[in-house]
Figure 1 (cartoon, helix red, strand yellow):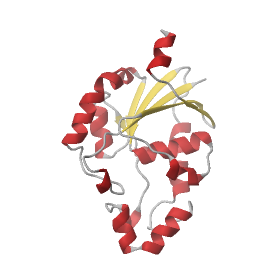
Figure 2 (cartoon, one colour; figure 1 turned 30 degrees about the horizontal axis):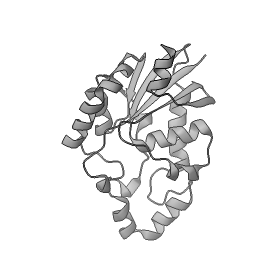
Figure 3 (cartoon, one colour; figure 1 turned 90 degrees about the vertical axis):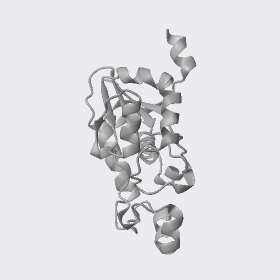
Figure 4 (cartoon, helix red, strand yellow; figure 1 turned 120 degrees about the vertical axis):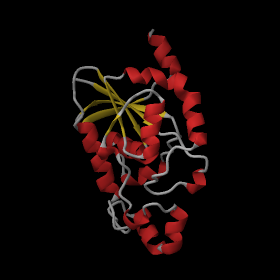
Length: 197
């Protein structure tokens, strides 16, 4: 039985340089404008059988703004960054350079007092593996870029170091298909969808 999950990256904020660990700021005007521009393309995903979002304010607002009326899933929350919560990477580096270096180098590190990268990837993967596996069930999940990177590593069984090499842009989409323990990355674009019609 194949399950199809499409991840939609939450809209961004006006200042990418001010991105913070476990950012709880609401979607700003620039983000709302992004959602309005992308709504026409992303609205068809509202027809998914199940619609979810992470608990982050930007993810919830993006899902609502796109008309998905998503259910919040705690397992799709960002990595628990412990005492670095709310800081930028630069601020964490200024306060604890050795701890940041350790965290970036070792996926098992909890130098910040929170969750390791390995545990984060496992949590997001566990969420994927426990989705209902009805034949051709379609799921949409709006989440922060970090959550989508974790899901992709889990699906591809890629080494944790690859996490830092995946760039997830605001309002981009990526699909996965399969069932628990047997996932495939699924790339579809406008051309692929219209070719089937």
